Image (cartoon, rainbow, N blue to C red):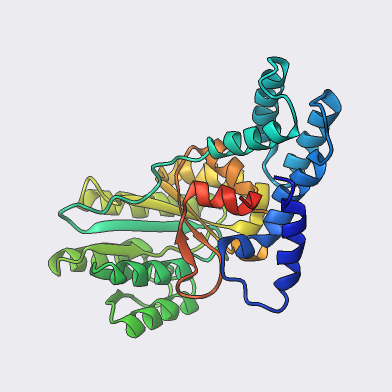
Length: 319
């Protein structure tokens, strides 16, 4: 386990000259903050005592694991240490990995094997990367042999509408769009009817970014979902919150308000390659109790990955 320290330094030094390709490299900043720091803390420790647990608590909080989630992990660690099931630093290291892994919902992948247009409503705060994620998802679904349609529901930003149109033109994917300032619910309503008529497999619906404190915009989001549900009681089949990976713990309260407004069914995290706040995924999964669907680890078309909890854990802890 503690070979991590030497390997981690050498790999980090190479990032300046080689383009990072593996998940470990893409998550290097978060890996330094959590995996490397944990190895450093435990290196040479012969017993698990209260001082070590206090240091561990501080480490987890500063690595954006969150106060509530950290408290849960420390209580479990203290309980197992008192029972002597944790005998040394090596066993503690593995125990912590296992405890963190338990926070994720394993069955986290979308199930799109249905006989109707599968509607994915994408929501989130300003600048989270919703429109880009939609474009990448559309291409990914298309590569799987599915037909896709896009609904340009972010009618507040001309750039968002144009961005979706470009994605559509590049990949021969139809885009339903109206003028700037048009009613978002009507855009998505028209898109859904068109998708049904054309037997489209998946409709990806964009929405304007909004903060949880903007009550009128949150009510508008709830209206959009009601309009879709009136057309099909099962739709939207997925209401996906997109989170900027660099937001840290600030996103928790926002996500809870989005959940109240539209009853989220999944989360996707963008921009994880440029942040040290990857530890925040643990508190997001723990406090929201929602599956993480996708993670973004770069700007390329293939840099949107299906989230695999074990792979993520191993990347952070260099196993």
